[in-house]
Length: 551
Image (tube, rainbow, N blue to C red; front, side):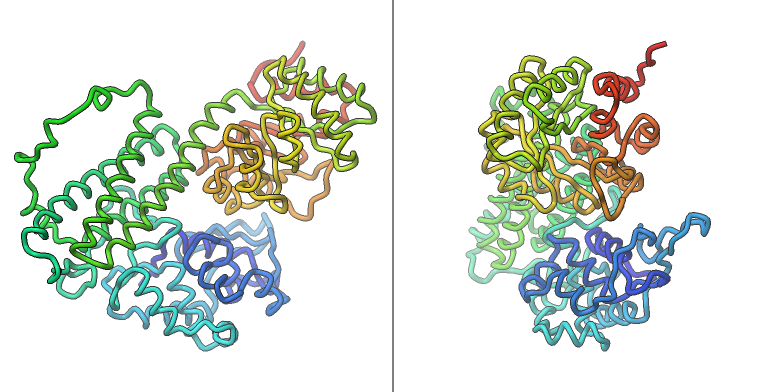
């Protein structure tokens, strides 16, 4: 029977499939699965591993032969990896190794009395790895990961008693569109309604009435938000998160009998049905629909959390976690919406060094602005802080007059001093959170991403845009690996946060970039090394917008 995985577990397996102890290995190995789980940083398995001091560096020290290789094809769908023609080179990950199969079997043995279909989450995979009989299991137990303790923690976290998880706190469950959530057997499931001997019957009925109304508001609001993200933003990544959240709410609500909720429902006698305000009957723009329904969801979840305390002491913790999830998702959705609007016309982004002198720098910057560049980033590793700030002040004046965005690389402090429009950070620089703390809520914060997981994380972290690459070898910066066009296609398929392709892009290959679905580029050498930088920038801008060149 096919093994089913949550969306987070599938992403972890996809990440794991890019790691191997040997280049010609066509199997997914257990040490690589550990790295895949750690790569899905917000999942329950990664949190458990981190609590025991296990990170990617520790795994690689234990298995030094593990190497990440772009020659492997890790696009994972359930049990099957995407096969590539032999002519394209590389090795397709075609199957689980015997060790991974044994780990999955161990997890299923632990979950033998869970209702079917069984869907394995990341913590279930980790449970299996720790419970199996191989070197990974031995090492995990040596680090203090006891399978019994992991299983007990899973049950305690979700308030289950020998019952399955329909989803997990963190990344969402990937249910097919509009497919009903599998309902556990009310006779055996710990998710079945639980009568509360503590609540007097009148209190119980009144609490059920509130829970029924709040549940309806939360589900309705989530559906509206999901429809906005799905149809207005067209953002697959955030839609999956919202869909998973909606299904997890359904699972949490199954703790309260639908029959009892309906019995307590008094719509005709509800004094609130006739109370309304003028603001509720009108929305000036779609953004107001989004904001109003996120608020509706959060208020409803809080009401559910409080009134559930009367009926089920385990339910409030679940509902609280769902409410916190909505806060993170609201930020991600709102920033994606606002950033897409603010950067709607920003297509050509040029990275500019400080040049040999201030005069040369200013002259080049003016010519680029006149050529129609939309964003200019000041990036120079040679100049001291005083010189950088001098260049930044000059660039601020030049770009402000033309309405061009001005970004400072790496240095949020200098971005503030220069009154720049934002800052750009790399994976090894300060975090988005730290940069945002310094530059404030209105400034742009961009992030360099080299893998799809980093791009997804940047969305959840609250970045305003991402740089995606490197795409091709660059004349101005050296890279060890090239995610290439495949990463651009992956980002374009699921993320609507503004994304700039970067790395070796020029007039000779820009068409390949645009074919991936990414319509923005960030360049340096293609402009700065050209005999006429302004003309080179203008030509790239015309290619981006499909305008004919000079005849």
